[in-house]
Amino acid sequence: MPAARILREVCAAETREVALDEHDRPIAVRLSRLTEERPLHLGQRVTGRLRTIALPQGGGYVELDDHAGEAFLRLQEGHGLTEGQSLEMRVVAEPREGNKLARVALADKAPEGLATAPWGSVTVELVEPGNHLVAHAFDIVIAPTVQLPGGGFLTLERTRALSAADIDTAGRTDSGRAANRALKANLDAAAELARQVRLRNLGGLVVLDCVSPVNRDAGKQVRDMFLSAFRQVSGQQVRALLPSEFGLMEASVEWAETPMAERLLGHSGDKDARAVCFDGVRLLEQEARAKRMDRLCLDLPADAHAWLEWSGAPLKRALAGTYGDRFTYDSTNPKSPIVFTVP
Image: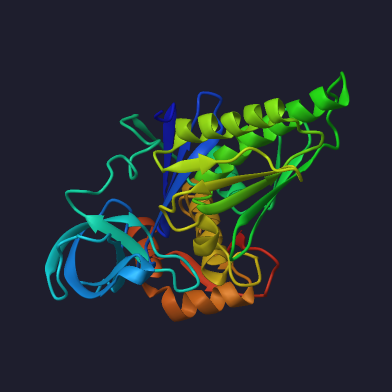
């Protein structure tokens, strides 16, 4: 299912896009950055040489052309390829942290639609820097906890092995027997988890810790809700099992795009220096458009300012080209970026 509408926010540092459903809830985001080198994108056509066939590992390793690095190609017995052979391929999964290589498929066998769902052919609406719907969507993709539509919260935590989701029913006002209350909470959580998996670009094993009690019929409803909700927003392959005796619903989601958290957060779990700097630049552009004649200073946290001084020359040039030479950059080490008028 395509999005109901798409918002695009263009800034000097980055372009952010958000796909919204009919209720204006974000279901997918896209991010293009001025200073980020990402040679491989979902759906991109690439060429390369099959360096090593490793069927015990499930395929082979491909050396990509144009210094794009290495990728993994899934192969089966009788594939008919030879080491050293040149291939035309398409990226079906982007690289991830932990030395997880990009995955490619032969161009004529690559699945269609992964790079388009749920974007479709909806007309794109251009919005000003700082648009609240765009900002809200990009806050959500890195938030550990999200609110459920019927009350309560869903907490997501990603580990090396899986993504775990826990339901907190505090604040819900469901009535009826315990089983009915649990079912309503679990259905809300299953639908929201599906949306969050797509929104955050998650994949692999996903586990939902359901609220008890969960009998077989209720478990089937929860599983079907997750599958149905996910297929409405993504073309990725997905499988899900009935909740176990311990109330754990397991799902396997095909990896596709690099998780947004890997592009926005540092190892500490907070926004990295570049992301903080880009937040400041977005704020600077908002002020520059509102105060078209003023000279402005962007005051950044120390690590964000250091990143700007070390790697931000192209960004400064882009800002000067758009707004003129009226910006200065400093750091009194505030907790978050500040923009003020220079006398």
